[in-house]
Amino acid sequence: MNDATNDLERILFHEDEINSRLDELAECISSQYDKRKLTVVSIMNGSLMLTSDLLVRLKIAFDLRCLNVESYYGETKSIGEVYINVKRMPNLSGSHVLVIDDIFDTGRTLESVIEKINFECNPVSVSSLTLLKKKKARKVNLIPDFVGFEVDDLFLVGYGLDYKGRYRNLPMIGELKREIITNPSS
Ligand code: 5GP
Ligand code: MG
Image (cartoon, rainbow, N blue to C red; front, side, top):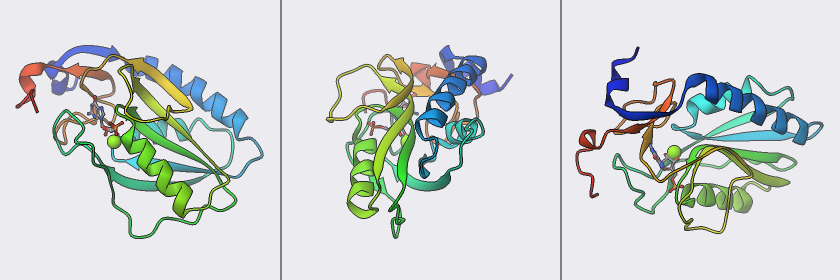
């Protein structure tokens, strides 16, 4: 087992639970976008594992774009600013867009990305999918169209989610021990 699992307080979702939920989500997406031109926009880096594991399950054709977005800067609370690091957004005219992110917390990341796609890319429609969604009160007027699991307001790592660049390669999702977090009040 990966040594980094010792840094977890508890495991919320094991690999097999994640995989069976991805089977269900892929089924929904494959039927919803059947015979439509689909472009998946994946928010990097957090949704790297999710994107690849979800996309291999799709039974339909699609195009893939990745956007480099930063919203956390290594601490465990959102600073409320979202940086979309792209020189030029793609032209998505004629495409139904599905934006994929690892986790929906305040919702600002997804909101900013969807706004930018709507304003700059001319899509037919934009929907969104997150593997995790925190149950706490949202800061934005948006909820993802597809959600893997609802979770309590904890700081989670694994399966793409990092703390200061670590833990992304854990195959499960878990709560990070509080003593690992250097400055819990930030
Ligand atoms: P939002 O903009 O919805 O507040 O935050 C979304 C982004 O913040 C996610 O893409 C993810 O990168 C990061 N994030 C939110 N909650 C967590 C969490 O519990 N753990 C980790 N590692 N990142 C999180
Ligand atoms: Mg992210």
